[in-house]
Image (cartoon, rainbow, N blue to C red; front, side):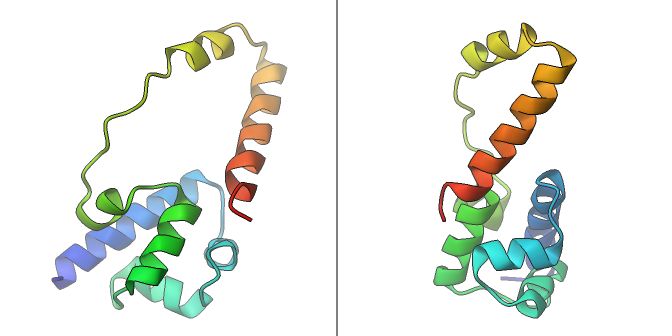
Length: 109
């Protein structure tokens, strides 16, 4: 893997971590890897083992293909979920977002 590819990989991970609202420390703890090592992965100065890739993929809720190559998976049909969300009040949307965040962060623990 080239330096540019490692930097791009780290950028994809950083974007997802930020979308999840997590610090590097929080993400590394959830993935069960060292904070310094995870920071090196994000900036592209270190490569990952397969075991670490699996941990990061599960924690970030991203496919390994996307992490490695930036290729998007085909999205699932989300129309039913969108229809439910469209009927929610702003307060209900906020609560739904919090519940979903908790579900996604805790389901592998």
